[in-house]
Image (spheres, rainbow, N blue to C red):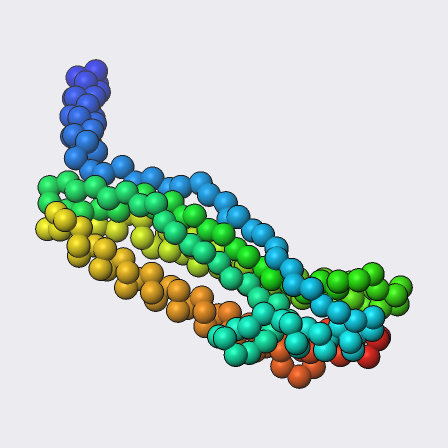
Length: 209
């Protein structure tokens, strides 16, 4: 009796396994991509022998943001995607999305060798600025990971040409992009406020302390 019971369970398990295999063959295989961002640093030349002169040169030569405001440093990125869609039983599914992300940090660099005291202050200043920009880089990578998590596996029934899915995807990506921009602005606002990190870095460079 006990043996027959085990045999019955075995038959049922085998049947379930066959059904699962059949179901899997009809479902798109979802793939998560392994990727790494390409990070690069570009510099612009500044002139001066003192901290005050260097900062004045930054004000004259720093990267333009929005075409009108100069800043000490700037982080930008280029993001493209390699996506694969599959249609099964009329439903469109995004089965994989591999990001191609390049992050570019633009930083100032003295054109000439600095006096020892100025060089020491400059090293402290640029290290702090670089660390600040690296946080922006982390935020960008977090956004891309969030996009990947939110989008891979998205599926819309009755969407053989994937138009509905792509429209939904565009809306979701826009929301995540706006959230990243807001997070970045809030970070800058906190860091640039009076007495905060960037403000102190600038004061120490200009005042030579």
